[in-house]
Image (cartoon, rainbow, N blue to C red; front, side):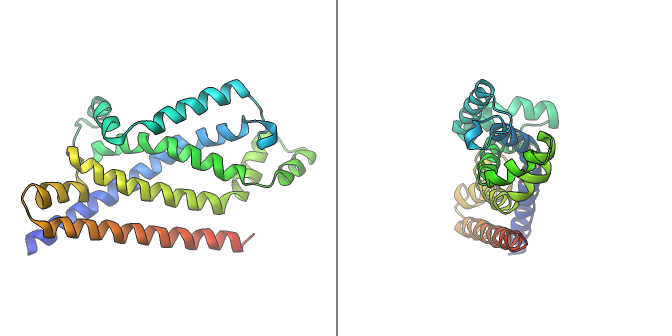
Length: 220
């Protein structure tokens, strides 16, 4: 029993590390792309620096990356993980494909959140002589914070699911525990424990995300 508890705790910690780091890196990669998608979009959709060709090309790239199945992407990126981390398996190596897989999703979430900002607020900022950078930093992002918080919540939940799939090819974490001990060694208790913990993590993240979003809305 103590062995099982130790393995479950270790796998849970590995999942937390994977999801935490990949959330940060995917936000770093996806946030500016999402902002670019919005500000270079059509003016009638809130674009403050309309550039149809650039926006169209960037949008296609994001769509292509989003359509890539995660397991295939993880295999394709194994050489990159080996180059950066020194290995293609394990918790830290999985952060690379997780981050890259989530970045296009983050970009779309950011774009969608910014589109919800009232165009009148942007027009008022322009009338006051604000620069494009000031509009982005002081108007668009602050006004979109509740929606952005909800988007980050969805990103974290998606990454928890991705991290579980990563266990199928040696990514570590709860998915790896469920497959190696629950499935391959015919110990259903390990699989049940992994599933229960994943469900609890998702529910907890959703609860926290909803509370933060509601708090941001109430402060408007």
